[in-house]
Length: 153
Image (tube, rainbow, N blue to C red):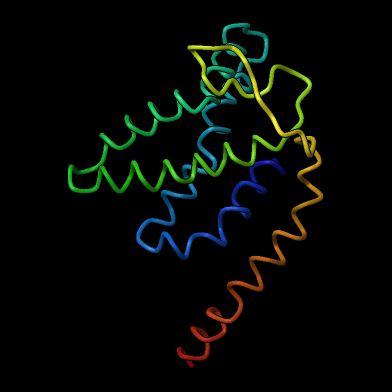
């Protein structure tokens, strides 16, 4: 769970650039972890381990986002692809910095099972980044929020 919160709080300061579709960027930022954790539902089924591994890759995430975009009207599909894709790209950029005890992220799956990482932090240590990320978000959004509240009075 801290990893999911870290992905959300890390991408939130950049949402001002994505003023048209912040919800899609946030969805893209958490979608790899949500899609890649189906094995939690049935932990004793070996097939879910491989499915989880395959779904938490850039290629499969691009495919999932493309299928998701097809659920939207034709005029919004490009926006969905770009915004959710940007969120997923941000997610994978953060995952690139994680140490893992397993194979890690399979960046070129299914073409290759090789993994590349810049191992700076363990995944469960992302909990320690949460206070700093909350503070950054408060500093960025406090002034606009105060102005909005002042305007409503």
